[in-house]
Length: 77
Image (tube, rainbow, N blue to C red):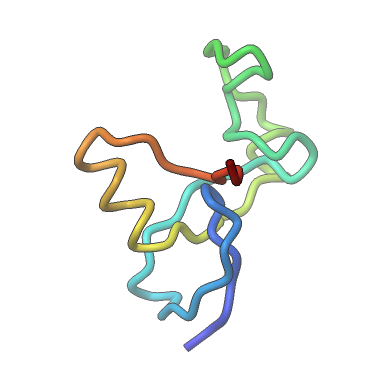
């Protein structure tokens, strides 16, 4: 087991690296390769792919995404 931070909600959680859902993220931008800060698509460059690493996503965020619900960080209020 490893402890990691969810890419979507930023909560720490324990997970099995072989079993956890991951998301490929460019370490320089914090976004998936091929996604702009405006949320549009573009071809991923070889450099962006080389900088990218798989980031874990917690089961709560995966469940919410599969059900079409909003997920990610929440703000108090």
